Image (tube, rainbow, N blue to C red; front, side):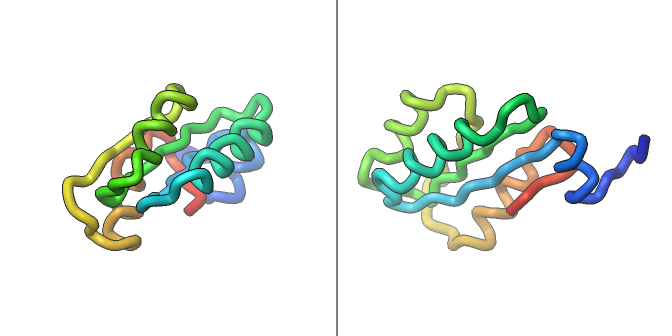
Length: 98
């Protein structure tokens, strides 16, 4: 087995990190997590939600409803790219889909 699989190889083997950047996403974040949860099947995955300093309560609600995801709350809105990079650094699996 390739010790450093490409994203395609990792997805085929069921080993994927999913990074979601959120900022005041409200119900959209919950719908996204529900869709991912329903689609994962037996894949070895991790979902990392990076919150860009939301104030609408969506981050806390997602934590309550989907406790199996990993969550990172940023104190300030650093923008999409920087927040995405935070999520990638937090991953535990080798490959990620962003």
